[in-house]
Length: 324
Image (cartoon, rainbow, N blue to C red; front, side, top):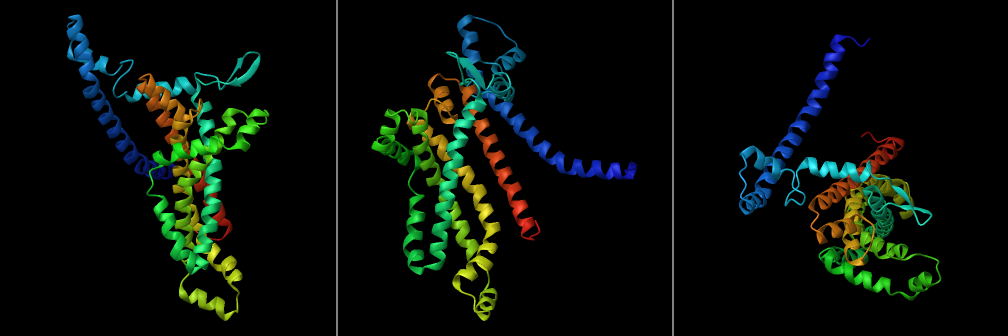
């Protein structure tokens, strides 16, 4: 039965897990508020001097925390903006007699960022797995391709993104599809965003998959040779199962990198929708609260994607009989 002792143990376990996290969050929020007061103070003092006002310290601090366009928004301003642009705005609205997405809703922008992110992640992961298999089974690929894969990650994505956007946007096939009305201009922008996302996401998969495929020790490989197993049988029955934990770890890094790639890709594409477009609009008009809310939404999306992969990992490893 669930008696007083069990309740006390449960409460103690929850407190032990939650209190350290809450203490860290409280410290971050306190530092954030302090930074907001210090960085927004100059504007408040300047306005006091210009208007010849007299304000107490409490009034000055209160004003620094509630400015319309602060240098550093306070936590309550950011969370209020998140609430207003998610719960406070409908995702869909009627326009010109048609039901369309509402650009004022942050979830609408998150959708336009998540779709190319997932597509780019799928492409990058597929290519990364294929490349890893080739590297493990071919010494020539290991010596020639792997250094190029590493070198590709030294190129700044901000330099690559505009090039990919210009090249892909001018492909005759895509332009013809737009002219024929088969796809819209927004759908056309999906291609370069997915490619840039896959560019950032494939490398973690390559590294993790190579490490996983090479994780079986020499005795396991010798045992497979004793059974006269072919290279294909060794791959499917030994190397691939051993690589699954490594693969999911690299997936979690890869999906976050894919999201960053999509947001970066939205900046030079001139996209109207997406978290990157939201960031760009906020920077144009000095809406720092909008910028921070978009950043938080991006972090929430990344966390949600990683949590989903973690749940999938637990299911797969449990089916494989691996304890987590």
